[in-house]
Length: 170
Image (cartoon, rainbow, N blue to C red; front, side):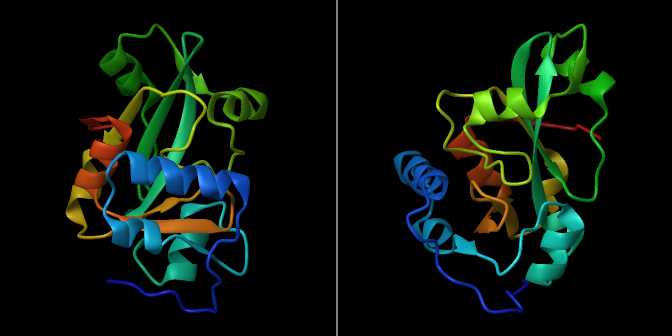
């Protein structure tokens, strides 16, 4: 199930974290997911770092990766154990090209920075794909708006709160 191995603090009123919590509330997330949003002692900008801090499998980390799909933002929530196959994703969304987004594109699209992009809490809805591999876990962990914040959730909840489409993305 995993536990947080080092001391954590509950999120202060950081604006990005607050936006994520509010978006989760508005989307009908389980109150336990919202209450479980914590700030870790250190930034966890990779799936491996997050998994180590939380003492869970790397596959339980829901990486939030923003791509540029023919100029439009695309959020892919993928298992930390996977690499996104951009050709497969392009075919899934009907794009000629899907590539990693620049830091500026990510910030403009999500209001968050790479390493802390949450599945929700963006200025406007972002088309989202959710890796079906996350179904393999009862609990997954997603970023909470800053590089130190994470929250527990489930595959089904990620699909529901993001309006995302389940997909094989690896």
